[in-house]
Image (tube, rainbow, N blue to C red; front, side, top):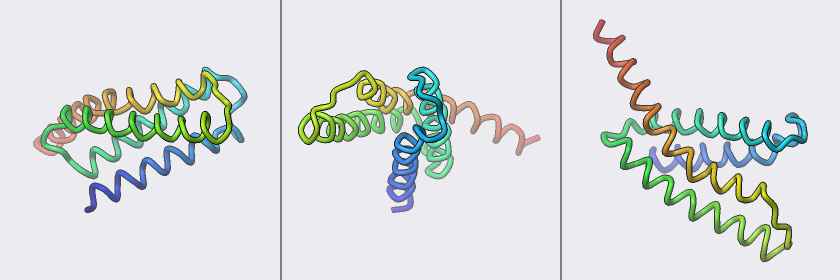
Length: 121
């Protein structure tokens, strides 16, 4: 239960950041993309440390699939069905939601190994 709750909270935090970044990040697609990518990676690394999975690579693939489906569905409904406002930003957000778990899983593995080595020393 803790795992699911952590996942939902961190995904909501990422969504709130994606919506709110227009107020403090200049109108530059590259800057907003990089900032969303960095924040998302940090949030997912925090998630991995909370969950502490035995197989981070397998969890990364599963999360990528789940997030890709959910974000794709939200984009489809919000930007194509309700208001027809297609844009490159929609594809960037979808790509970030699919790629971030693949990046954060191995980073978690590296950081977790460093943490264990520091505890052993």
